[in-house]
Length: 427
Image 1 (cartoon, rainbow, N blue to C red):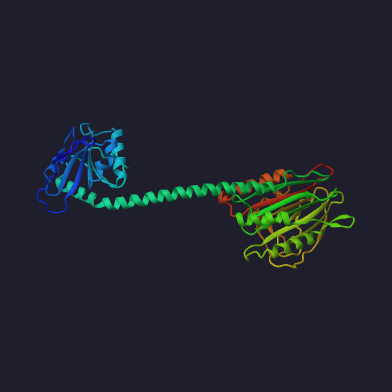
Image 2 (cartoon, helix red, strand yellow):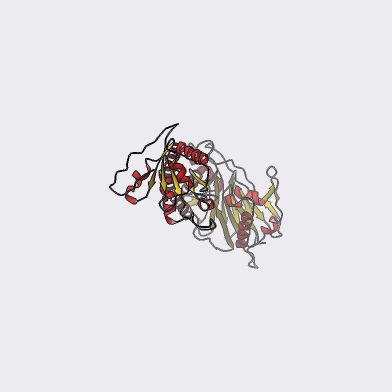
């Protein structure tokens, strides 16, 4: 066996390989200066199939220390112990990490193989008294796997670089989506009006950062308030962009000679539909919507509907019915007509608008319109709760549903309550 102390200026002597019967394996031996188990003696006598060097690692000679070897034998410094318990030394951890870095197979000679469990691919543990044939076979296998280990290591490094690039891209996308979500929420009403006998309560729950739902509540004049809800097909960025367009495209007043007039709900939806149709949206992109106005003195509700789930009217006695109207989806083609509907509300009545993301929570079975759907158990009682309690209860129902951590659709609710003489805000 030829000895070489790395980090010194001594040039190693040429190695005699003796009588070769096959490929000569170049073996480096670590940790054999204090102890030389039978395996080391076996390697000394194996000049017909291997050449060996004792190696000491040093920071400056790491590349030259290991690049020339086909396999490395690491002698466990704990051989003199009973073989029970113990742990790897810091030096052994450093050596194993370095060997894995160069993709070199390692035979660990140890009576306590459990200490080296999880050392990684290309690492094999053998007891000190292992027979020569086994040692030969293991070292031959490790030398043959070195090119594979290097290839795996190269691919792993490429994957790590790719993973880091993807992480940076995902972080950037996440920041952009968070910003888009914040901007979208800035378009929602900042405060809910409390004018005369009317009160509003709302819920807005995107299933991703950006929602395909949007709603608004706004003052039209001293007697009228307008409100709407719209739902772009799907969810995410594409649907969210459509909702931003709706926010700016909807027109609820028009200028006339002596001032302005309120645009009837049917015309509001008709103009919005024509503007969307002019955008030549893809066939898979369309919007459902509902727009209405409420006179806070007469409690007259005028509304129009565009393919949206009909709102529910909860009466004073607790009975529930839907408010229907005629109108197709928005954005499919221009020139569509929408009906104007009118209902005069009474004290202690409630109107609840919602997007179709709530239907799975609210409705057990929906027959063809205009038949009233079958509500799920307990929903009729829930719909009679005071406004904010209703919103809280609906949130709890959604959160308790199977798969609630990845809800399939956005959910939006707008509740309009008419306060009665008793001051109640719900039936």
